[in-house]
Each structure stands twice: as C-alpha cells, then as structure tokens.
Image (cartoon, rainbow over all chains, first blue to last red):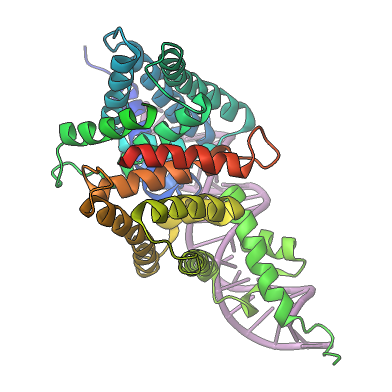
Length: 194
Length: 194
DNA sequence: GTCTATACGCGGATAGAC
DNA sequence: GTCTATCCGCGTATAGAC
C-alpha cells in the first residue's frame, strides 16, 4: 500500500534513536544538539519532535531500552544447575552482551547524571535488579560451600566492574578472539570466588 | 605586605580550578558554563580569563594535574621486595589514592572525550605509564613463578577496572571502613593472580 | 510528516573602563 | 585584577504552511 509522500513514521523513529545513540556515545549528551541529530537522520530539526517530546526523553528511552534488553536477554539464557556453572554462564553472557553494543553500554554509564531524578531512579532500579542476579549466584555458592566470598555485595560490584572493563579495550579483529577473552575473564572470576 | 585592592591572583587561580573540578564532576564539562564557574568563585565571567586561556585548558589542567599527582604519589610509596608485596602495596595505594579524590577520578574517566586530540594523547600516555607499573609487577611475579597470569595486559586492565570500581559505591561512614575495603579487594586481587 | 521561519535565552570569549 | 557591556553564534522548542 502506497503511503502519503513524506510519511516515514515507521522507519524515521528508529533512525532518530540510532543517530542519538551514536552521537551521544561519541560526544556526550550535553554536547550534542538536536540539529546535529536531525542532520544525521536527514531531516530538519523541527521534524524530530514528531518522534520524541524532547531531548531528555530521547536519552531516557535509549537507557531504558538498553536495560530492558539486558534483563530480558539474561532471562533467556539457558538455565544452569550449579552455582559454578551459573557463574560461568553469567560471566560469558555479560562479556558477550556488552561487547555487542558498546555504544549503549557507554552512554548507560556516562549519561546517568543527565537523567532527570525520576528517570535516574527508574534506570538505577533496573541496574540493581541485574546486579541482584549475580549476587544471588554468589550467595548460593557461598552457602553451599563452593565459593569463598568475603562480602557478596562488594564482590558482585567488583566482578561487574572488572567484566565491563572489557569494553574499554576490546576491538574485534584484535589480538584476542571473543572466546579467548571470555576464557581469560572466566578464569579470573573463578579464581576470585574460590 | 598589603596588596593592591582587587588583587587576588594567588588565591583566585586555585579557587577557579576547584570550582571547575566540582562543577565538571557534578554536571559534566559540556553542561557547565564559564558563567557558572565564575558564580561559584564569586567573580564575573570575564575575570576567569585572567587564569585560563579558555575552557578547554581548564579541563586539561585538571586532568594533567591529577595524573601527575597519581604518578608522583605512586613513586613516593615505600619500596617492596617481592612481587607479592609490591602487588599488595599497589592495590592498597590505588584504592586509597582514588577514594581520596573522587571528583578528579570521575572527570578523568568521563571527560577524556572532551579533550582536544593533542591533550587526549598526553593524558593517555600518563595513564599508560601508570598501567605499566602494575603490568611490570605482574610480569615479574609470573617470571618468578609466584603469579599465574594468562595475559598480563588484560589482567592489568581487569585489576585496575575492579579497583577503580570502588569509587562508584564507597562512602566514608558507610558499612565498611577503608582498611576493611582494602583488605577485601586485596584478597580478591591476590586470588586472581595466584 | 516534513518543511521553513522564528522566538528567546544562553554559550564562549573579548574590549575597555576603573 | 575585576568589572560592565557586548559580539555573535548556537541551544531547545514551537508555529504554521504544504
């Protein structure tokens, strides 16, 4: 079915979000103007407001979408029986998922302070839910005697910080393949908790 | 010795840098205006340009000063004999140093992309020099058979990411004291490399 | 749905008086 | 060294034509 000339609602919307994601990741939310985003999409600045009420919503939608993707992808992972296997699966999942979308990961860390207080709270809740999954694994392993963890909260944050650090240096086609990277990090995580 | 009225060069300069540090850390470099900085210092915007040629230099000086402080403080640490002791000293030093100046640490991570290419290169060189100190410790320990490290480069970055992560959650007066935090992280680092 | 035009304030930086 | 005044471009967002 032919559409009215100039009607691209279904494809322009996603392109606006993609352009915003890329530009926010490159220059930072505060440094990117609506005009730049419009230019990247190939429309005039005014047209953006058909797809977002304002710039803040653009940022929030990107971060919310990223956290939703993260939690649902984690939920879709195959179940494992032992804490040891669950920790390995979590480690490999975290590395893979984060390396697949470096821009979203980047702005999810860097632009939190540019969210309004209400939006910030919502994203933080999702982040804490993700951390809770790892902490539960550590608690289960400690309770069954296979892990030795001084403090599950701190160890949770330490492991996530270590794993997310991959994004600062990994480049596909570099010295190490993704499976090699996963193996090296899993080795470190495993030793940290045993 | 009395000075000319309005002459405060020796104290206003530092106050400008302090205000910039605090505001950049809170809102981000791009989101902070020279007028805001001036207001925090208690002068008019034009007066700032007696202390910095422009906003970019203000950011660069903060990051450069932080990296210089980091490297000279590390150099001032007592020498240790074994790789094991050197790694423990590095771990505790890193945590202590970073927790003492959370704002400088924060902007040194977040605002790198707002440096001009030349300024960025200079800061990156200093950062790599710091990482080199840790990597040397790991190499020495591996060569003498006390450490088991799959990849010294990655382990270096993983340890630093893990340790710097303390800054995201630690608050003085919280559940854990600084010595307790140091002990927990040193325990994790130690296990990671042995 | 997109365009052009525009309102209106804030941005970095400078000039010149005191 | 600091002030006031100012240049001038860019910021978000909106109005109204097509």
